[in-house]
Length: 375
Ligand SMILES: C/C(=C\C(=O)O)CCOP(=O)(O)O
Ligand code: SF4
Image (cartoon, rainbow, N blue to C red; front, top):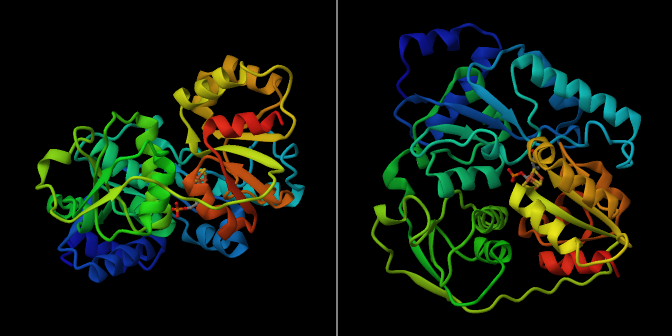
């Protein structure tokens, strides 16, 4: 991969910046990138102390570097104000705060959400270096911005250098669909993504018989990326780049989805990815149909921005016994180990909770989840 004189000099410094350059050069060589390109925004995952532990914390501290572009970070392992209520112990909380202080000193905004696009909405064609697969696929598919599916470490290296190797989804022709998915059922987009992700190769373009909302597209992408190596999809008549390419001849038809999860939930959870304002209001409107408080643990996850923008809605949910947490989620928090069976409407959580937290899962639509909470 070609390096400018300035980029060569960064490699020769022998410090944390050189280590970040080495990571980008190694990536560039692996993927045969011709050069590095500047990025507007990096989003780093691997922020929960639960996921990176003491070694990750010490490596981060040893880098001793500063971010040179806008940098946001993924959820931590706890709500920074209500961690005791989540059942998090003091030792974990202390180490998580130490880790967040290192990110802050490096120049990250402590956004602690997997929905940075609700805070900074990238423009079409903008080059990013984002980790967090649900955010990556949303940026590429719904916004037409350009990022590869970065790891927490490669996103961090790009945040320091301000660049990323020019390969993959940064290049227009690599964003073309390779399979048409005709959807002939009124399927939950989250579960559609969850099922299709592992069944297809390449980039899907979907044909729906209805208009999908922004939240439907978010859920479809999160589900797709959780079970498959998909970082972009298109939807005919709906996503910004659907009409820039030929419609592929290869086609599958989806007319029904079968799931077989079964356990009695000791907690119901929503917000993987973090809920949008519209999704939080939807929960509010459903809860108004039930008298009294919920009868099971019901945890909702969203970003601080959405929480603060809808504080009256949050107050109502809390009055009904729902806990609305920020800064974290069931997948990356050790709080989840208190539970055995988690009910959720999120295809991504159905994938990651058993894998990363070792709990059983039960699928329900949003309406099923709210109803179950009162049973
Ligand atoms: C482990 C996760 C996030 C994190 O550690 O920040 C959740 C899954 O990450 P993906 O990038 O969606 O695989
Ligand atoms: S809520 Fe879901 S999408 Fe967001 S960080 Fe957690 S696992 Fe990832």
